[in-house]
Image (cartoon, rainbow, N blue to C red; front, side, top):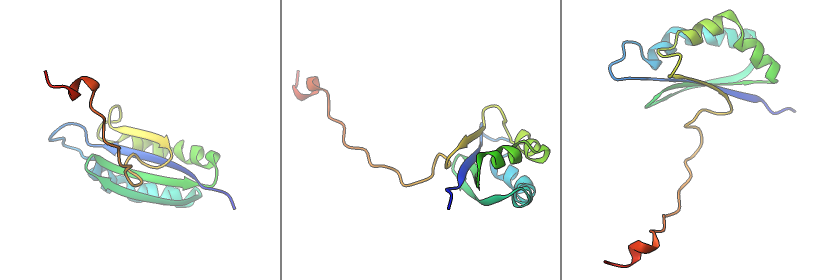
Length: 118
């Protein structure tokens, strides 16, 4: 049994009052992307909405399958249509940026000079 190869597409809302939003992009392209994922061998995928935009996490059996799907004209057209393809699109291996439980940070130790009052 092989481990799936996960990839993420993150679409961010850039700027206040943008005419086009990441959730609007999802509404326009989710069905087309889902259909191409089914017909091109994706083992699973999931959408998630965040305060910063939307994320599509996709799993394929092998990296070659991802590359084939990613290079399809329909996939490229959908990625080109994000609200800001230069600053508002991240495509990377692994889960989206907000995936998983946040790790608690240990309390910071104040600098030594803060221990003495002046």
